[in-house]
Amino acid sequence: MNDSTLTPARPPAVAVVYESLFGSTRSVAESLTEGIREQLLATVTPISLASPSADCDILVVGAPTHAHSLSTPASRAEAERWARDRARHLTLDDSPHTTGMREWLERRPTARLGYVAFDTRVDMPRIFTGSAATAIGRRLKKYGLREILAPESFLVDSHSRLLSTERDRAVRWGREIAEAALALTDETARIPR
Image 1: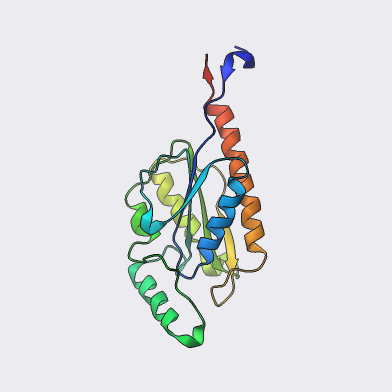
Image 2: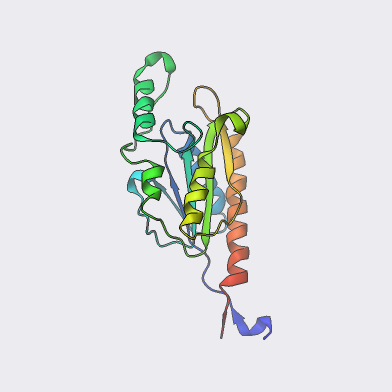
């Protein structure tokens, strides 16, 4: 069968779901969604509003790194205490923090083609910080989802503020996600006439 007898399926739909405490992970999620939207439809949703059964082809999932992994109720409570400490100059993100990525992932999210994971972490060697994206990937692979691109970390300073170069890097990575999604669709979602 030659290419002229194949019809490409609809463009892949991308759902970006994130957990953010001080706004840095939200900023990354919004920036990479901007990059994805240059080529594809994409939604961006905070974890508190996200359904694990989102109707999507590619699920992009991100969270801040806490104690080498995903946040816990205790680490989220600690973040709220930090935000109340005026000396830290932190502002808590405005979405509810009762549910974190760890709990959301226990609900077994779905995506037809696969997932991409990202995190924010302090600007130090990963061996010292760990990676929420690695923890996300382990869980999603366990549920049978396919990794589309290697996980990515976006860096924050010691005050949990996103480094100045990271927003532009997130937009570029969003473009890479879109290109990978389109390539995957070309490989797997073409149907014969």
